[in-house]
Length: 589
Image (cartoon, rainbow, N blue to C red):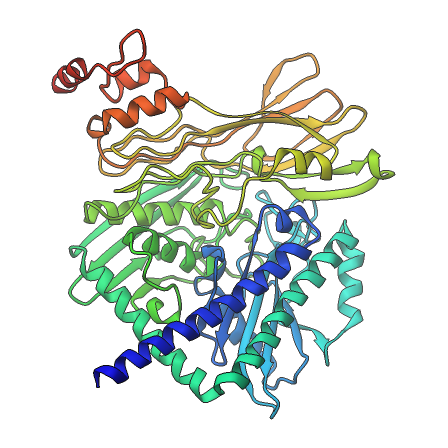
């Protein structure tokens, strides 16, 4: 029996690696062939493999807010409306009311059909679009009162290929409505190619090992993952905490949006419950969460909080998490026609942050502080016409300056996390590549001293970016910034991170404040100044290792005055650590 169990474990490990390698091949295809910078530079996409009954099986290095629950709902919705599949079918889906994250995330879904015509698995590729047909050249319409003002093309389970050939009616719709049709077309082909790579590799795997073997593997893998999740939860104490947060004032919500999250850890049962029902109804703005993002945001926080990366994020481990939502709730299940344009980020981050902070209060050594809110201009969508390319239109989101990582029980905040929902899977842009691709000049990019949330483990400092159009050009920058009023909070005595700021610098050098949501047009000689939020700290700043504080001073991330006044760490005139003075100061504080 021991030998049989060992053999099963080896087979499970081998098949898991095979499936993960297929997902990575899908990702590499999209990354290498995507046309827009949001794909081939920022890596804002995800590739997953689902069982035939729509359960998440493998996801490789995908964005958590993309894959937690959402793909399962999408696949079920497509199956409901297309009860029979044929080999060569492909579907385009981006409906925020039917499992998708937000309308800007176009999903290509391909059923994997074996030689006998049996549906075996499904692959899904989700790719954020540089432009999705919105009323303004941005994929984040925070001010949109409803989906009609938002303007995005919505495709609810629309068949886009039959027999491996495009249905041109759909393609023409997209090319007519989207501002950068050739760029969209290239991204569509890249996503489709990624899905077809997954399909062909899975068919080869089925031929290699047999579909019955893969079916058995999937159930065993889900059971193993559920046991791993239950064991991780049992290491925590039981408890119940309600944590609150608030999104900044925004168009349509002048008082902001309060968020309440109740977390219940049932350690003996190996189960966590998150209740999001005690929250406001859907709001007349683009911040409302989709069902996928509401559930996903809570689940992202739980996986962050366990601090156990051996737990596989799949349909098996999902069984140990219960997230309660209600319909017509801004952090629940949206009702048409409320807009969910910004569903993946702002309000979703408030849910994730409150959830992981609640877990930190239940269990010392678990949870996290809050990751910094977004989206400042340094993560905004730029658009205009490029004089270097004959006046051709361009639209693209840049990731030039967002940090905001949260302090955890064991690490400082991650500098390049960008936001809690993508867990660092997206990447900061290269300055040189952005300047090559677009008619912009980035004048500065630097960390902001003393903007970290202080703590035993500090949050990441904020980052400042200043950029504008090249000489003789003009650009628009659209952004939907949270965190200009409500900072990222610390956990277990940790401090708050620095606030988001946005300014326009005129050609004369005057610095003018910008509203948190909207856009700014920059003429030649003008720039936008973006300061991204810092992350919250975990634990008391007075318990931080003095050597780590000195390191932060040496790096220029904090000043010597902050080291003394906040961390109780004293440096002499030469910058060396004065340990006796430090101990005396900390004892006095």
